[in-house]
Image 1 (cartoon, rainbow, N blue to C red):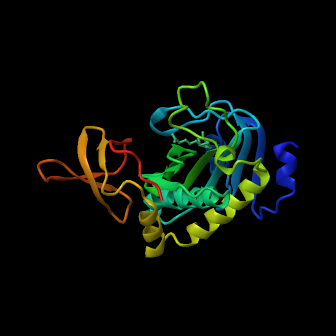
Image 2: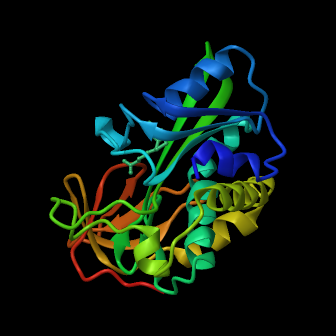
Length: 251
Ligand code: BTN
């Protein structure tokens, strides 16, 4: 059954724009926000032709294979960095719901299942002069992408591989949106940060973020990573690609 039909069976209780094919759901959500989309509105696509990843990378979104959605949020600007945490916790819950026990969040927002990346998260802020107009929270989940024979075979995995059964993408989207609503309600609460921190697999591990190498010793309330180098200097890393030197620890 087509994803559009599956979504009709779900009560998503929010404004939805669905595309069989779109360049990027984040871009479509930004355009919708500019045209007045309310908080909670979501753009969903079966296929993205120019899906975007972090750091200018592309995100592969072929038809019938994954989830690609972008949620319009209007958080207080003080809570903007926590939008990342909301997404990571929601995907974490989704992977758990699919029966995977080896789930963890690799700082800042990669959800790993059985040690491999199962989703990508791309939050983007939209400013109107110095006023935050909104945040677009883009989430991609590999549901049945086949990575065997691809360069990503040692780093990426699909949900159906860990669930060991066929999954209904309409149900997955409905469930993910319920989890997003749940964690977003807690955006101002210390409970959100505590939950995210407790699911991080990065702390106490040797790491490298850009030029900084050391041990990940803590995270700040805004989600930045604190790294202690060999000279005992503490570095504060707000973004960046993390390389974990040791084998990744899951829980
Ligand atoms: C990453 O590099 O890990 C982040 C990937 C984010 C991909 C999602 S798919 C839905 C949304 N639309 C996009 O163009 N990108 C995000």
